[in-house]
Amino acid sequence: MNTALSNFLASDFFYKFSRSPVAIAAFIVTMTLVLSAFFAPVIATQNPFDPGSLNLMNGFSKPGVVNDFTGETFFLGTDDQGRDIYSTILYGLRVSLFVGFSAVLFAMILGATLGLIAGYTGGRVDSIIMRIADIQLTFPAILIALLIFGIAKGITPPSYRDEVAIWVLILAIGLSDWVQFARVVRGATLVERNKEYVQAAKLIGRSPFSIMIKHILPNTLGPVLVIATISLALAIIAEATLSFLGVGAPPTQPSLGTLIRIGQSFLFSGEWWILFYPAVTLLALALSVNLLGDWLRDALNPKLK
Amino acid sequence: MTSPLIKVDHLTRVFDVSKPWLNRVIERESKQYLRAVDDVSFEINKGETLALVGESGSGKSTIAKMLVGLLKPTSGSVLFDGHPIRMDTSKDMQQLRKRFQMIFQSPYASLNPRWKVTDIIAEPMIVLDVEKDRIQIKKRVEKLLELVGLSGKEGNKFPHEFSGGQRQRIAIARALSANPEFIVCDEPTSALDVSVQAQILNLMRDLQDELGLTYLFISHDLSVVRHMANRVGVLYLGALEEVADSEALFKTPKHPYTRMLLDAVPDLEMTGRKRKEITGEIPNPINPPSGCTFHPRCPYAEKRCKIEKPKLLETDSGAAACHFV
Image (cartoon, rainbow over all chains, first blue to last red):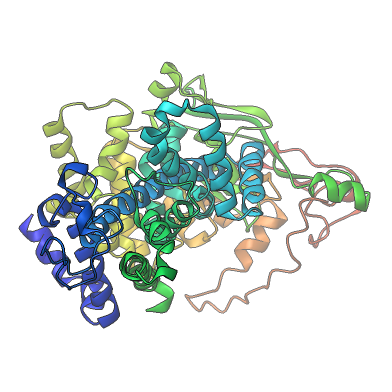
C-alpha cells in the first residue's frame, strides 16, 4: 500500500497534476463540495426537511442579518418556510451528486457492456446496437430523459411516486447518456480484439465472455474514465434541468435544481438569496467537475504530451 | 515409419471480400472471393521443424491460424495426432489444446499490457487445467522464466517494462506453459532487431532439443529458415509450390519460384555471385492467373503452363509443383 502511494506520487500523472493550477483548484472545489455533501448531517445547522426543526417565524431571513422575530442569524438566509439556505444546499448537493454519480455509473455499465458486445461480436449484433445508438443521438438527451420520466410516472402508482422519483431520475439520465460510452468502448474493442494477445487467449479455448471481461475491457478503461468525468458534470446539469422543470427530484428530497426552481418564484419579490446561492453552488460543482474532466482527458492523451 | 504428428489435408480457405450488399446492387458487381489458401497438403513429423516461406499474401499466416483452430477452413482438415482440430471448446478439444501452442509475430501486441508477466505466463496452465495449485503455478512460472533466460523475479513486472527481445522470451514462456508438443511460430523474429533475432532463434532451437518440440516455422526470411528448418515448404499465392529437405532445397531448388527467391538473397559472403532481382509482383489473389499461378513471372513458362495447373509431384528430395520437374 505504501509503495502504491509512493508510486503514485512519483508518477507522470501526479507530476502533471501538481503543475496544473486549474486542475488543483478544480480538484479542491470538487472535493470540498463532495465532502460537505457527504457530511451534511454533521455540518448543517438544521435538517431542513424535518418540519419539527423549522420555525416559520424565521421565513425570509436575509443572509447574515439578525431575524427580527426570533433573533437567529442565517448567513445564507432562509426561504419562505424558514429553512436555512446553507443547510438546504448541503442536502440538495447530496441528492444532486448521488443522482449524478449513479446515473453516470448506470450509463457507463450499460454503454460499456453494449459497446463491448457490439465491438467484439461484430456483424449483425454490432449493426443493431450501433443503429439504436445513432437513432438515440438524433434526439436531445434532455428530451429522452423527459420521455423516460413521463413513461415511468405513468406506470408507477401515485403513492410510490415520490419514493421512486430519484431512481427514475437516475434511470432517465443514465439511459440518455449510454451512447457515448458504447461508442468509445466499441471503438477501443475493435482495435483490441485483433491484437495477438486476444488470439493467444482464443487459442487456449477461452470463452468470448471471459476474453471480453478479462482481456479487452481493462484495455478500454482509460478513455471511459475521461468520458465518465465529463459526463458527471453533464448528468448533474441534466438532473438540475429536469428538477427545474418540475419533473425531477420531488420537493421532499430537493436537489439543487429543485432549490433553484423554488427560489425562482421569489426572485422578483426581492428574496434573491433563495435562488442565488443554490445556483452558485451548482455552477461551482459543474464547472469544477468539467475542468477536472478536461484536464484528465489531456493528461491521459498520449498525443498531447 | 512413424505416423506424422500433424497431417494437413487439402486445406483451403476462401475469404469473402465482396463490397457491401448495397454497393454490389448499385454497381452491379458480383460477389468476390479470395482464395488465401488453395488445396495445401503437408505433414509434420514429431521432433522436426517444417518452415513455410513465401511473400506477403501467400497465405502463410492463414495456414498457421487454421492449424491452431483460430480460423475455420473452408474445406480440408487438420489432423493433430489423428484428432481433427476444431474451433469449439468441448472437453476433448480442450484436451487437444494442451498439446499445441503458438508464438506470434509481434511481441508488442501479443502480451496484454494490463496483465503482469506472471499472469500472462500462467494463463494457459490455468485455463487448460494443467496445474491448479497456486504455489505450484508460481513455481512453474518462475521456472519457465528462467528457462527462457529471464530472472524468476521479473514476473511481477508489466510487459512494457521489457524490451522487444525480452517480450518475445515471455511469449515463448507462455507458449511452453501448458507443456505443448507442437508450436506454431508465426514470424517470431520479424519484429526484432537482427542482433536479438539470433538469440531468440537459438533459444528456440535449444528448447526444441531439450523438450523435444515440433515446430511449424513461418517466415519470409530465408536465412532464418535455413538456420531453423529440417524441411521447407514454399508457398505462392496460397498454394504449395515445393516441399523439400532444407539442405536439398537450398542447394538444388527444383521449382523456378524457389530458385528466384534464392537468387534474390543478398550475397554477404562476397563470392561474386550476381544477385538477381525478383521480377514482377505477386498477382492479385482475387483474380489469379490461369494454369500455373506463377507463369506470368516464370522465365521458363510455356503454353502448357497457362492452361494446366501443375500438381505437386514427388521428386528425389521432396515434391514440386511444376511441369518441368
